[in-house]
Image (cartoon, rainbow, N blue to C red; front, top):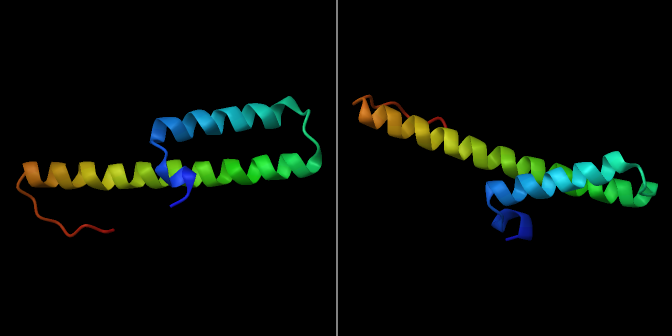
Length: 74
């Protein structure tokens, strides 16, 4: 499991914001910019994955509480 996969949503979002700030600063050389950008994409994908899992979980809770039984689309 990578370090990013161990991060909470909040930790990932904070790290992503820091990377975006570094990129926007414009002080990085091209190689470092690409490295930071690649890390930012991984963090973005991790945040997206956490949100999608949370959304499915909320949907399942709502369906159960309403007595509706639908197949989970995951």
